Image 1 (cartoon, rainbow, N blue to C red):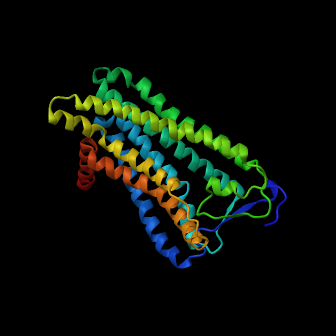
Image 2 (cartoon, one colour):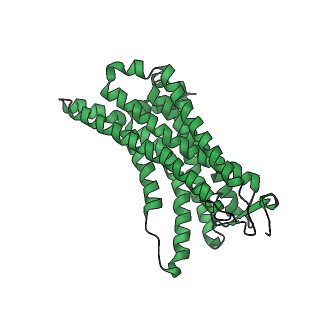
Image 3 (cartoon, rainbow, N blue to C red):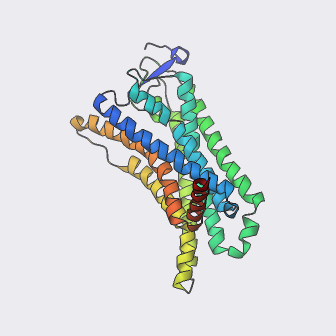
Amino acid sequence: MEASNQSTVTEFILLGLSAHPKLEKTFFVLILLMYLVILLGNGILILVTILDSHLHTPMYIFLGNLSFLDICYTTSSVPLVLDGFLTPRKTISFSGCAVQMFLSFAMGATECVLLGMMAFDRYVAICNPLRYSVVMSKAAYVPMAISSWVAGGVNSLVQISLAVQLPFCGDNVINHFICEILAVLKLACADISINVISMGVANVIFLGVPVLFIFVSYIFILTTILKIPSAEGRKKAFSTCSAHLTVVIIFYGTILFMYGKPKSKDPLGADKQDLADKLISLFYGLLTPMLNPIIYSLRNKDVKTAVKDLSQKCLSL
């Protein structure tokens, strides 16, 4: 598509698996199943945190937010991916691309902040249990949850506003399943230094700071747990934060794997690596949201009990 400026670009073409049509039906079924598991698992978690009065505590309020966020995050991209597997010409409008980038970017940044908030909640619960009800009162945890969403939204608005102001000349083919912001920036026919710097600063704030905060919180948590004299007491204390720690390790571990793995220098292997990178990116967006409810259901006694009670009530109707 020939274009001299941004206003003439009305749509982008998403490559997806166009070069591997035989894989499209297989991945359509696989991703659809994963998406349904995400909707079901996180939907159940949201229901039990609302319906079970025992779960009306800061930790489970944050968990309910995390589940809702995971549904929003996957819904912002998965329907587009599934449609792309069934459509010969995979296109998305310029405005649709901007909206999809905004939602994905906002949800990702919000999850980073929310995981940090949940780490602080576990720190207070284990290291200062007598002050927990005061520190993590409703007047504290509600603004904390809201600020996570606001911070993610503002950051996304800044990044996407900078991206859509760029001129796009000629090439409008995005080598991805969705409008991934780095893939879109590659199509700009202008200097993207400001965008790169802005995203670098955002990565430090929304990735680096939460990781550091979580790391320091768990140092204090583990130090406190090790000081508990009884083995049963240590086990009980650790069980209250093991689910969150597992989610954090999967979430950030996958990010490190995606962006830390070495690039192939073999030109013949470039296409295979390009396909692998796209698939890894796609499944990264599905893996954590799918595993979160499973982890919290298996490793958290309160959630497990609440889910069992809900299922029994449903069966008795």
